Image (cartoon, rainbow, N blue to C red; front, side):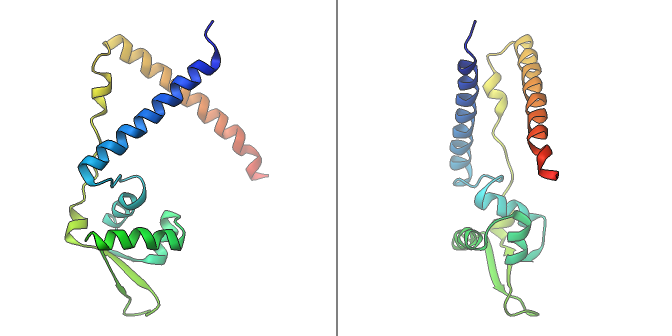
Length: 150
């Protein structure tokens, strides 16, 4: 019988390698701007809005003001955004995308390459296993969060 921790370690190692692949892919294609985190996440959010105050952006993305300021500074120095004072409230900084920021495209690696050597049956079995893992994790998360509401 296989030890439980060997299966868990294999899953965690696969997760780690997938994250490394993402970082390498986004680093090569977009200079590290992953649309789900950091500067890429800010650009993705700004594409949905014409302009927004820095304070509102931080609130929406749940980023501390100091961290947001650092990320925006990098985006501004790389030409993705501009910041200027609001005409109605001189205390507020307004953040807007530049043309370069507008061209930032949300793309994803071709994950199908990972499964190139899998047969149809192997893909189907793996998908079913992942669905079982997801269902179990969802149940565990719900169980852990039950106490949060009382």
